[in-house]
Amino acid sequence: MTPVTDVQRLEPQDGEVFILPAGASFEEAERLCEAIQTAKPGVRAVVVIGELEHLDQAAMNRAGWYRQ
Image 1: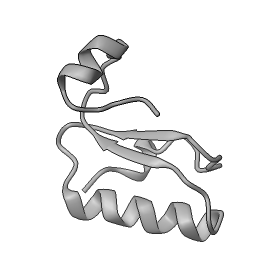
Image 2 (image 1 turned 180 degrees about the horizontal axis):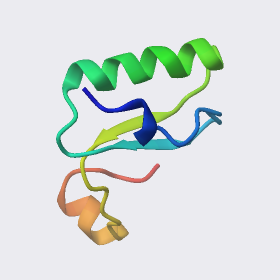
Image 3 (image 1 turned 30 degrees about the vertical axis):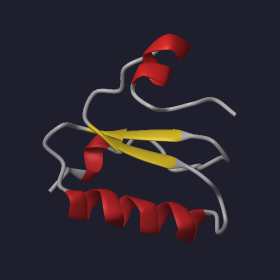
Image 4 (image 1 turned 180 degrees about the vertical axis):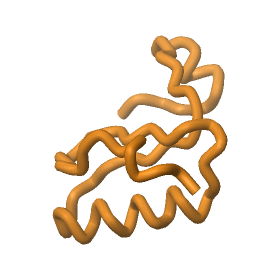
């Protein structure tokens, strides 16, 4: 389980990305999603487990992620 001391803040805004350490479990990510919705119902945020990498548009297109 991720220690509470690793949580820096929970003030979710639309479009925000929350990054959990690579060792976090899927269940921990689900609990964070629930906490985000409790803190601000209806907010649209993303929860990522592990490193988040910046991809350019060409890399996203190769992966099948097309910008709309």
